[in-house]
Amino acid sequence: MACANVDGKFYAIEGTCPRCGFDLYKGTVVTDEAFGPDLPRVACPTCSTTFSLRTGKHGPALKRTGLAGFVGGLAKTATSNDASKDAKAFGITRDEETGQVFCKET
Figure (cartoon, rainbow, N blue to C red):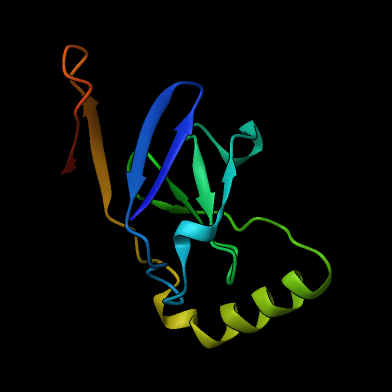
């Protein structure tokens, strides 16, 4: 599971990229409005596909340069059949009295 705290709000999404099968939890959190209204997003460190942390919907790829961009290009080519798969997203709630955090699939 990949978890993120963005501006004081907690998000969780499945930890494995549904497109390439690599570690989505090591991805980059994206908050740039150029990626559309479904923010924040997480970009897979391998194939660069972005996924909404709120809904799990796939979106535009994060542009990477250098070795990361080269590897991302290879991963996209190898996984083109899975390009439209979405990730599972989870709702996070926190009990203010006890501090307990709860997570359920949305």
